[in-house]
Image 1 (cartoon, rainbow, N blue to C red):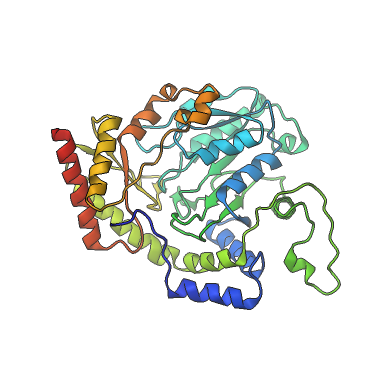
Image 2: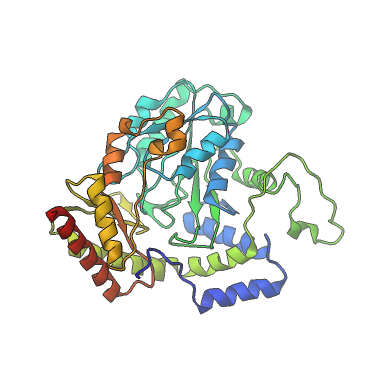
Length: 403
């Protein structure tokens, strides 16, 4: 069976993990701090906070901004449930909007129509490695100054809707010459096992708030907030005579370990020169195989403004039903090839249906989902395996559409 997205674990990573284990630092320590510095340099920003997941990063930033019951947060219907769940955790209302049919990303015009006096945050979601239209989204947030109603000093200082990007899919992608992480107020990355750059589990918050915010002060505050509200981490407490600490708030437990950071440091070092190059080769091979077949709608990996990072290959089959798509997937699996679907729209999930959402209110997201099949993209996928995947997809489509 060709797997869908196994992590890249080789001797270089194993050796660095072993070095971390032998160093005596396996929780948050020098490797995590070094990883944060290197991520900041890569993204072109000053401060990045590493955590145990992107989900934790999204929620902690909503809580930092004071999002609470009665507030609204705008997000695309086409995303993973984590984007919406963190809004619910804060007591706020997820306001889903539709996406674009071309590239799966949130529709700026739909954002405009969804803004109310209760809107506090826009959460655009980069998809499959491709960034959203941040020029339009940032302009929408900036134009909210005249109607934005702040409820705390942080919101008053920003004076407008916060743009909190779910960049779980897009580490290393570029928009108008800038890396993701530097494109809006705050961006959150995922380093989950299936991501381009993995730390097994993990994520990072890229802080890029405008003046007069001090991103270093916010980073220091978030370090406390994500470690039980404790004003010193384990590394700081090891300094001579520095053992005493205080709890200054009822914080959370979200910190990244040095074991995870050890993996990330190796992954980052070879990311542009090796990882992205191989993923690009795989995507281009798929494009070559499906480009001249009018049964397929190929994903966009790059355009005039954007260079994606080839996280997924979300192939859509034209003029099929959801039932036909599911049958095609079953047939592909019968040929020993693993595929996936990204995503089932969140408003169609049981929990959100019970809250009163109707997936049919987001027709483009629903159509995208019903026709989408994600093909394997990972570093060790061989050229022969790519041919096997392509053959399985074509034969499955032939069989199901002929039935």
